[in-house]
Length: 308
Ligand code: BDR
Ligand code: CA
Image (cartoon, rainbow, N blue to C red; front, top):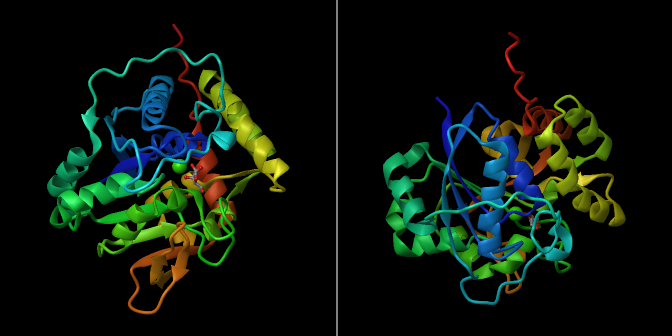
């Protein structure tokens, strides 16, 4: 049976790639997508989820719910320099999308936690504000969640916002603290692991050429900005932070894990601490196997019309 996923996200170029790969992964079914403020405002993140749904039309379509507009205790800091003002590379030709009436993220997270219990995996690809609010509202319900896989942190490597802090943790450290303190089954996917998940541009080009069509063209267009910025920063391709978290939700054997106790510093630093572990952290990853899996799933070839 496919594992039900609830993806909490702030698209974001790498979030978009993560969603597209998840929507084409038979081991899981993305039943819910909740949005959160992070890379962009929560309004823009929600528009971006709707854009991706209209582009890919996953079957079954997930329920979309809108989440927190602000971190728990501080002002939102976005990452539009990297992702573009609209979060998806600032292309000027996205078709307009309607949103209709959207559910609210926190009650939906709690509802799914109560109903699906251990079956549910939550994949958190942005700041952990929605999860922290759900924990505050009903900690007992959140204990039912089978597994939480969260992209965030920089444990034994430098951060990407400050020398020691990674973006998702930096944006909402109070939320991260609450999630780490909650006793959840938490698998953290920090920069230590994601910096090994580098996709060369030629690899993407080759994979998309096997699936040429409007989806492939759109992926090429919106990911161009991330390639340019990552290359300028010295990487050999795009760093696939959020796609790695989705891949590890599907197949934890792609990484070696270490059980650790982490505490969150005032700027979102993820520091090792004494005491019982409060999460597992992804360390070494099987990069070749991850990239193969990701590229196989990102962009299915367009369906051929039946010949008459
Ligand atoms: C994380 O920050 C965001 O910009 C990315 O989407 C990813 O979730 C990496 O630090
Ligand atoms: Ca993200």
